[in-house]
Image (cartoon, rainbow, N blue to C red; front, side):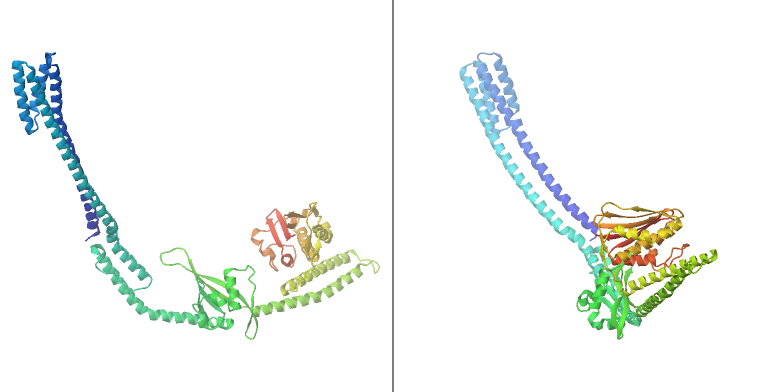
Length: 570
């Protein structure tokens, strides 16, 4: 049967029950109304006529008009005879009325009164009988209405309980089949007896599932071949690689990674990485970095190939766009370990070379400065103007070389981890005064006015005063170099809560926001900068500050100058 016909049948059943219940209720009400009207129109009128005639009899001797009233009500009673015995009683009353009209005696009045009582008695008995019949009819109607109502309720409950299931059952069967096929159960078949509408759908579905099963069976060998091909590609990668799905299960791993982890493939594949990591320190570190990434991403020091090796871990998310969707979905991650041992060794050699050269350069530079100082001594002899210019040029370049070698030595200390801090309690003003004093000659040369902002109350710092003073001196030196002739520079300190800030602000051309992060990289210089420098000062300054668990930031806009801020916790 079609779904349309099923729905029509259900609605027709409900309509038929409503029609039956309504018809029974209307007929019952009509019957009760008819009985009550019959009682009122027939027997009740006879009682009224009889009462009127009794009243007239009481006045018939004293009021001549009473006889006319009696006769009028008698005629109405003759027209309203409803009971069998009432007709006989009315005829007798008529005979006694005619007798009274002839004789006008009291005896006839008594007879008529008795006749009227008889008529009233007959109607009262009839009213009682009809009332009992009406009550019986009402009870009978109530019973049938109740039975029909209960029947309708039971039928409605049955329709409500079974009719939706009867309608929805084939739809559920179809949805269930689709879900099973979506879960790659291609052996699923739907019964064909799902009705006229769904019979064809079920046949088409079964045909589709059969084709899919054939395709799956034919392509399984291709899939296995592709899987082996992918595994061969993964194993051919010379870098250790580990693949995880979204449940953090290891789905593939190459031989390099197995050698590094000292595990077998059976110990890893399709097992939880967090579970395996409990017994493997290296995997634990890799999983920890994946779950809680570290911004610094320090290289991993691992013993491999019979030596200490360095690996840089890279975490690559695997994203796909599923059919019918537009957004990418993350289905796992790849952990790739790049072997940077060679680069680490080269970097170490570079650092050692720079440290050696810088250290060796300091001696001849100091000798040049010492010789220059002796040359400038008037006791040896006065220099002419050209010689003085050459002397100043030699001194300036020698000081610059000395500054660069000092920066290089500081950089090598940071890179090799040999940076030693000697913190002590220091007032921020002492650091500021040291920087101003160290840059006084340079400031006077460029005509810069240095303004100091310092509050009355500020906490002391527990820092390596020599290194932090070097940082502030470097920042102030940069500010002087990038400040226009006869410009102003602000250096100061302030405290907010338990944070002390030391800042240096200039009003030069400023730094393009694109380079706010790059200026702290080694050897970086803002494009177009004409002022000479090594590009190491800000990088070393940042390393020194962060070694104290502080921060060094810049706030700058083109045409408005720059503000460098050191922040330390009290």
